[in-house]
Image 1 (cartoon, rainbow, N blue to C red):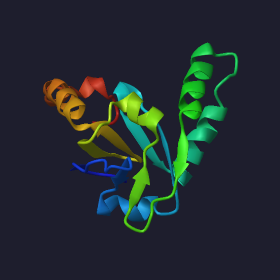
Image 2: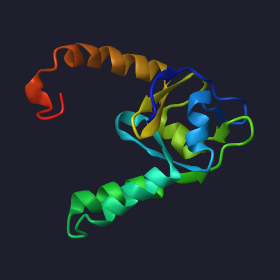
Image 3: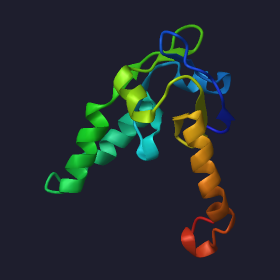
Length: 143
């Protein structure tokens, strides 16, 4: 499980230093994909395989499923962190997420999300009020 918020920067070679707390879980390899709300998702390889297996169950007759899988897999890249825990973010993914320098790296349960720092702050500010007002009915059986 990935938890917390961190504020690394992209270096001049478009590398991102993964938070130390995340490195062990990502050391054997990871997959970077486009995420919703213009962030990037960083999945441990084993977790991405599990997601892939779930997506294989989607009917190929579903246009929404086909569209989702095309965007997800076409923009995905696999990486192995170097000895300093750095990964390279390819230009198309940096463009998608608007990553220039300052980033927010957040734990999101079974994956890590990488956001432009300003975009994360804007998103978080917009969501915190609805989060604090969340009622039991919003997520039945969970909260």
